[in-house]
Amino acid sequence: QVQLVESGGGLVQAGGSLRLSCAASGSILGLYSMGWYRQAPGKQRELVASIISLGSADYADSVKGRFTIARDSAKKTVYLQMNNLKPEDTAVYYCNVAQYSSYTINFWGQGTQVTVSS
Image (tube, rainbow, N blue to C red; front, side, top):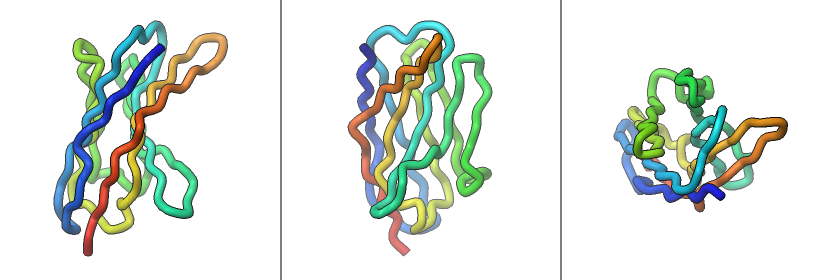
């Protein structure tokens, strides 16, 4: 079982920056990805950024050039550096670990609120 603990959310003005962290505990074996999703009120949860165990990263078009995902494998921690934040980035951000084998197992953090004021 994998447990995820997020930190770093908060309130920031448009144009500001925040850094989210997510520390994983438990065994993460084989091929896996670590990433961030977000869910705004009345909207579906969407992928923000993810990075697979092999190292390549993927971003939503809306955050490319502004957000950077990074991973510290030794600490089993994933970070999301968010720069030039916009009001439309306001959402609850969820950390995700997806473990891939013959099927996919998803683990989720509790979520952290990010609010960007205009």
